[in-house]
Image 1 (cartoon, helix red, strand yellow):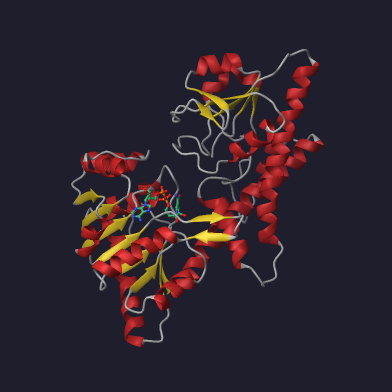
Image 2: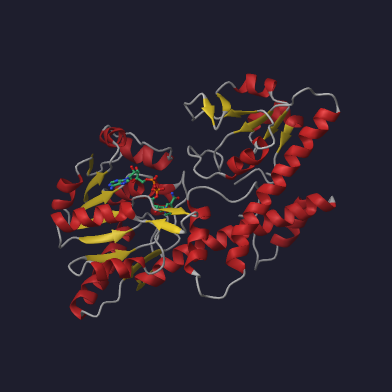
Length: 408
Ligand SMILES: NC(=O)c1ccc[n+]([C@@H]2O[C@H](COP(=O)([O-])OP(=O)(O)OC[C@H]3O[C@@H](n4cnc5c(N)ncnc54)[C@H](O)[C@@H]3O)[C@@H](O)[C@H]2O)c1
């Protein structure tokens, strides 16, 4: 099949690589640097499997900035462009999805469009009404950044939703398109018998937002447990171990942090909350609030330690930020929780220095950025780290982290 993929971020690139094992795939991006790297068999993002597949596998994959040409020849277009939530305007920006839809309809109106971007509940159905000539399906993406291709080679589940349509031949066409797409994902996967669910697009959209909100709930729950233990002087680690041996609760995703963060969880929880307009709820709002409270608490702990250092005679203690990334091994720091803590500490006029080897800027929000770890460790009186690294071992006593289990 002739497939075009719009957007070569974590979602688009992993799918482009996955599907180009068995199909002719053209990846489209508006950033020429990314396109050039892919055509040179190099990955614009850090991901071991993507790097390996691009370098060593026999893939039928090319990249281009010419979306019109790529969509003209495509039977199926996957849309994996960014969607961002603006809390000020309570508005989920889907304009990059619509840019692609308009271009596809102009070039190849018979092509199936698969929305992989995360969108509000009901979005694909509305898209379908607005464009009666188009064929749309929605498929939620569950990958983790840094393991994007791995998670598509070994998917926990494949879900594809077809919009309901009053025009039955069209509805049938979209249900068949959903089945075809699920088949393509299964064909690219290395695992056999991947659980596959076909449903309506609106339910599939809800799956994505509710799944991410559950993950945010779990992170928030163990973070609030940790806040309680810290305030009351209890050992968080023992409590979490004791709780998570219950097979109904299970281990994993229970390591305290500075808050949930990254590209998806903050925006998807807020989007789900916005979708609850006129629907009774307490919990969804509490999850969003809990993450703010956690960052306030962590910042308060940091500020209290700076005050202690001052009381012990330190002149103007400097707080170091060890990595801006959310997870160890990650190469992006979109909406990472440590930035929220940094903002709060900085608001108190406390000098800060950032150690972030992947950031090629001299400053980050007015704080000096360094790539020199030894100088950073020497210069800072206190170092905050959302995730521990053995690099910090020589200055262990200066480090404030809540990474108790030494994993994400
Ligand atoms: N990152 C994740 O872990 C993850 C997981 C599940 C779902 N999602 C969702 O998938 C979508 C994409 O996420 P991502 O992390 O891959 O984003 P990303 O920001 O890493 O990549 C998006 C790419 O789209 C490109 N782009 C923007 N407008 C374009 C256009 N008109 N035509 C072609 N390319 C265009 C950008 O240049 C960028 O390279 C978002 O809606 C996100 O919420 C992300």
